[in-house]
Each structure stands twice: as structure tokens, then as C-alpha cells.
Image (tube, rainbow, N blue to C red):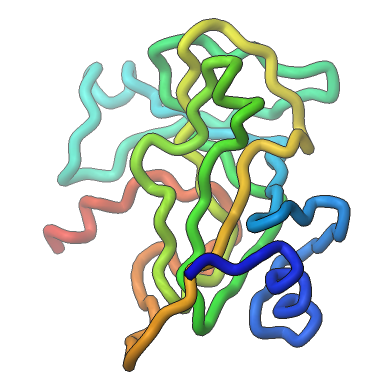
Length: 176
């Protein structure tokens, strides 16, 4: 079962779900809009011999999105993050791009829209543009929604927990 927008707002007020900062105008019928932070990362392919390696940390370059916007180029992965920190102890959080964003040919997550119960942190967005597009800091870029869970569960404990910034891939840690 997916929580309604009213339930999300109620659970934020009781502390069962944390969204910080929280803006009641971002509540939708069954989701909450999250906004884009003003910084992004891109992988430095030149520094990585032109190839990203799953078994190694890959160098990345930080970009700042100015108030007048930043044009994203097609066929390039940009890692962004949400302004909002979220924490959920007894629901499964998921994000999806907003339809208005998708209709411009901007993908907000390539594969990682699923959060585990207990996840706490900022959402790293895997942003991919189909065509050149100008983006702006603070834009409502995606929406978070929550599934109720049944049964006993273990809380998420992994390499991305309690992050404070954009998280490039740490897949290389799986080989350590």
C-alpha cells in the first residue's frame, strides 16, 4: 500500500518520516516533491583512461548549477542530489521523476529509485538528458512516495547510509 499525501504529512509531523526541510506546498495526492541541490558531479573519463571501472573508485568533477541555470548535455551521466534529507524507519521510500521533467527528456534516476527501510540521507540522482536541457537549482525534480511494509524487517545498513553529499558509485567496496 502507498501512503497518501495526507498520511505523509501526518507522519512527518509525528516524526515517523523525516523530510528536512519540509514544505507543505510540495505534498501531492500520494507523494512529496523533492528539489535539486545546486551541485552535481560528473565522472572524469579522461582521468579514468576513458573507462569507468567497477572495481575502483572513479574520479569525478564537481559542478555548480548557477541561478541562471546549467545546460546538461546528452549521453552524459550527471550525479545530483536532493536538497532534502529523508529518513524512514518503517516504510519503504521510493523516488520517481516528475512527469513534467520526464516530458522534457530528463531522466532523474537510471536505476536507483528504490530505497530500503531505514535509509537516512540525501538522495543521489542519476540524471541523464535525452537532448540539451537547462536545469536550475531548487527545481522540483522528483517525487518521493512511501510503501507500507508487513512483517519483521532489518534496517538498511550500507555504504550510502547517512550520507551528507552526492554519492558516486562505491561498488568497488563490494570487492573489498
